[in-house]
Amino acid sequence: MQAFDLSGKKAFVTGASRGIGRAIALAYAEAGADVALVSRSADSLAEVAKEVAAFGREAVVLPCDVTDRDAITHAVRQAVEGLGHVDIVVNNAGGSNFMVPFKDLRLAGWDKLMRLNLDSAMVVCHAFAPHLLERGAGSVINVASVAALGAPFLAPYAAAKAGLVALTKSLALEWAGSGIRVNALCPGWTATELNRTLWEDEQASRNTIGSVPMQRWGTAEEMAHPAVFLAAPASAYMTGQVLFIDGGATTA
Image 1: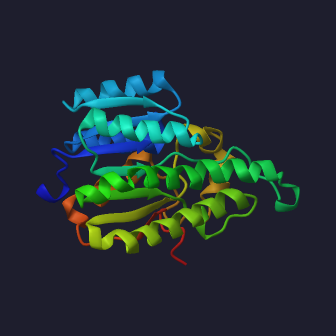
Image 2: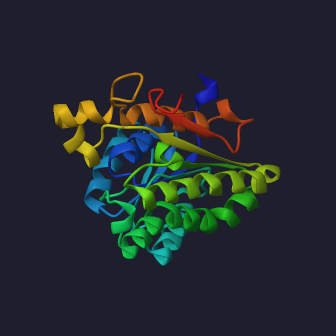
């Protein structure tokens, strides 16, 4: 369908080596876009690049630690040089590798999750701003989380994702008149490699999705399809919005 066609588009996707980021990169390639793949693991990116090529699209592999500001700036420059230009920017890299009561939180842990989940996206947007504004077009998609609404024992992660939603809305307002759209995706519980220990354990899985009305985990592909929508002409009149893809968990 023309409304979801990304032929000729160029995308930049962080956290593209696995999970939701990989699914988004492949969905973009399937829809016709060339993709700059960003992640720390060069070997994993090379595998994703082969899958992108199987769709007949070009892949630019950019190993990069998104918590390193200079590395991000370099990766953005390489993406523009390698692809010629960039139309779609997806800030997907993020996550949390710990849960802890707030009173026991180490401040270094707070700083680490802020750098990974909020600062990295800010730096990517800042680095791309001159390019996008000069072109007068583009779609920025920030992958936040349902945790942005609050999550016990995940205060730094939740605060970072809430900040990412606020950044999304702020840039949407600032850039709307320049032809650049900025939206956010908020995935719910999604079965990826990062939380395999939860969804493979029957009891833990049942407890985790107990409050999800659809009573199941989401898949990475189910997060990628809305990302195609936000990048495509189908959402041309949409900016500053936050899509919750969570099986109904935030409906109440």
